[in-house]
Image (cartoon, rainbow, N blue to C red; front, side, top):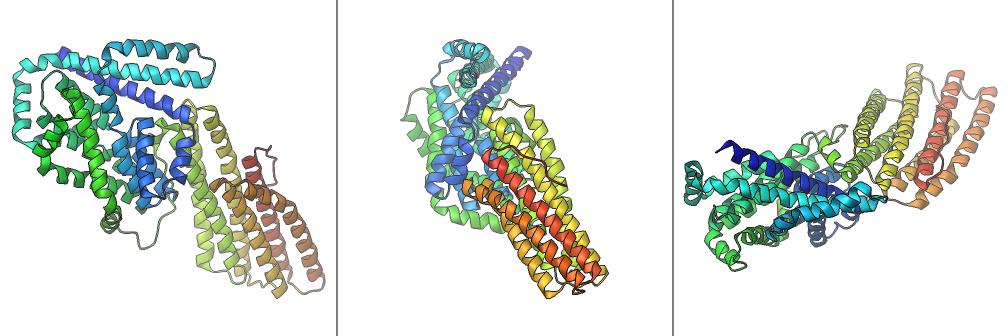
Length: 539
């Protein structure tokens, strides 16, 4: 291959990928957080999940990004495996929109779209206009890349190496399947591989029968991104990524024996080679989904057997994928999910503390410390992730969400610190064989319950987007202050009557003091939700 042809192909590919990225990024910014809410709320029905996966992928122009997003949601517990499988099936359909756009063959107007997009992008005062300009400019650059690749590939018909390649593809479908899989895995974009195939077909360099095995291979190769992103995630998230691979491999195995029949159907849809490949891509993915959607449960069962759960449950590991930083809305959602997991760990610290109020155990105290260490690691990791995310272009609503997460992280981490303080007090109780009176134990357990409920309400406000939970948590904070003061006075009275030992008395008073501060942080978390000024609290 001549140097000029190689650089033309690589340059055109670069323009194509850049244009697709810019178009998808602009559409994401226009959509804001709506994609996230759609995925969270509307995926309980498998059919709706398919349509939603197709819609989201058509918006962000990447089935890999959608699948990575789904893996992140499954990992965070926002989506179960059957829901994820239906969305992944839809993503395979949605990604075909790029090939359909290419088939319109409007490359001659590519620079017109770039010009139409550049003006609002560069001088637009409103962000929405700039984002729309980014979409148009990206669309134009995408077609400019296609035209560049077409021009670079035209001389290939005269080369012996390319003649040998097409001969092998004609004689052996496995060669084309492997080539499509490897190319897509390397570029991490099935649309880019199919764009190259369409360019070759447009120049008359390959036939539809040669292109189909390559097209099937792109569907397998595009699963690599999700598989990589699932490394180090939860078992369910790894199963979601594996189901993408299994689904696409199963579809390929079903359609390979039907290649001659499938080729005739595709040929009947259009006489233009570029449109035929686009239609083949769409028909294959739609048919594959229709055939395998009824077996989604079996698919989930199969991957569950292939990837069994760990006997000891999931580790307290932070799961943040740096690749999601290119999709800020999704990256923020993953960060938010990890912050909520951090909150649940702080809540568990309080639950374990309650279980150890009467008779502290070494295992219980060790579990509290394990959770506190995990919370500290989460804080450091999420903050670093948010710092990296702040370097990206964020829409106004995403920037506000970004700011809110810093407040949540700080308050949850402080709750973890108070949980550690309580652990140290319980360890002191165990070492000194201190005993609480029956009344003191009952009071402490009730106060713990009330404080935990308040903290949980503050977290639920965010997890369920429920203002009533936030308002209730805020209303409870003054009551926690009053309870702490009442318990303090009644316990001092018991000490004065020699109904409780001095050591037990000090431990009791310090525990309720820490719980009162947990209430303060719960109120802070609720304040951030309702958009009120956050006030400092005692550490």
